[in-house]
Length: 392
Image (cartoon, rainbow, N blue to C red; front, side, top):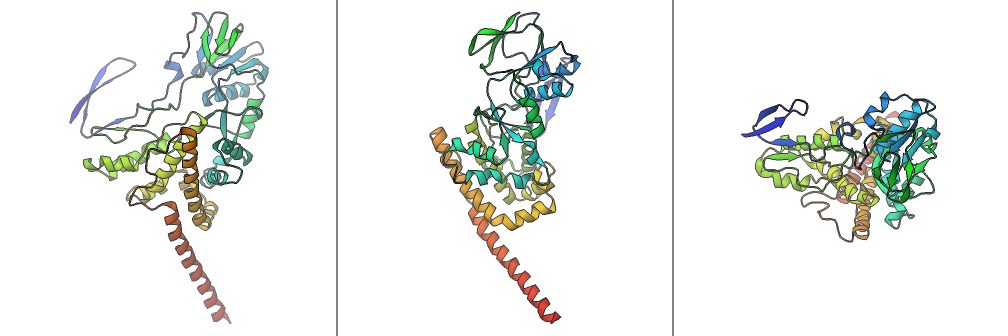
C-alpha cells in the first residue's frame, strides 16, 4: 500500500488516496487545454485575445475580423466553425508557422478503414518511392493525404484529419501568414519570427489555438515498479493504446514480468516532423503484430471496439483473407524499407529489436497462411468434385 495526495484544482482541497497496487499516470502525455493554459508568447494588457474554447460566445457579423493563431487541428476546427456560422473567408487571417500533411477522412469509414490503411505499405513499396522525401507525395497521389497549398511542401505530420469538403473550405482562406511563430503581441501589432514589420491587430479578435493536444515526449518504460505511465503504442491512438496497456497489466499480472511487458509494448512518441513518421510507424506495426500472439491480449484486441479492425464489414474481412499472404509479405518488406529510411533520416539504426526472439516475423506468418490457404483451396476443390460426381 502507498499513500498519495490529490488536490482539487477548483477548491484546492487535498484528498488522501490509498493505492493498493499501482498508480496509473495519465499525465505524462497530458494535453494542454486552451482555456486554462497561458499563451506561448507575451501579450500586452488589453489585447482582444481569447482561447479557442470561448469562440462560440463571439458574434459573427460583417464587421468582425478573426486572426486564428495556430495551424494544427485546433486551428483548423476553429476556422471551419467560423465558416459554418457564415463568416466571410476574407474576414479570417490564419497564422500558419508550418504547413502539415492532412489525412483524408473519406478513408476513415470504420467498416473499411483498416483495409484502406494498407496504402501506407503499397505506396512505400512502389517504384516511385526511392527516398523518404518521395513517400508522402506518393500517399497524396493515391488520395490518402492532402495539403493545404499544392505549391508548398508540408514539413509537419500530426495526424490531423479533414474531409475533402473541409479542405475546400480551408483553401477559401486566402490571408494565410507564413512568417513563423508569433513572438509577441503589442497593443497594436503582432510580431512574427520572419517579419520585422509586425501585423496590425486593429479590429481583430485573436484566437489562440497554440495549445498542444498531442504532445511529443521522449518514450519511457510504461510498466514501472509502482506505476504505469500511459503512452501511445499505436501512432496517434492514445485511447486504444491505454486500453491495450490496461489489458496487458490485467493478464500479465506478475510483478516480475515488467521487463517482459516493457520489451513487448514499446511506446511511440507522437510525430511532429515528417520524418517522425518512420519510428512511430515501425513501433506501431511491431505492436499490432506482436499483440496478436500474446495470450489473453490478442483475441481481446481483435474484438475491442477501440480497434478499428473490429468494425470491418464482411466485404473488408474477405479482402483481408484473400490477400493475407500478400499483406504480410508487404508489411515485412515495408518495415525493412522504413528501417533503411530511418538510417538515412536519423543517421542510425532503430534502437529496438523489430521482431523479438520467440515471435514470428510477418514473412514466417505468411508461410503458415499460404499453407492454410492452399489447404482450404484443396478442400473446396474436393467438395466441388464430389458434388459434380454425385450429381452426374
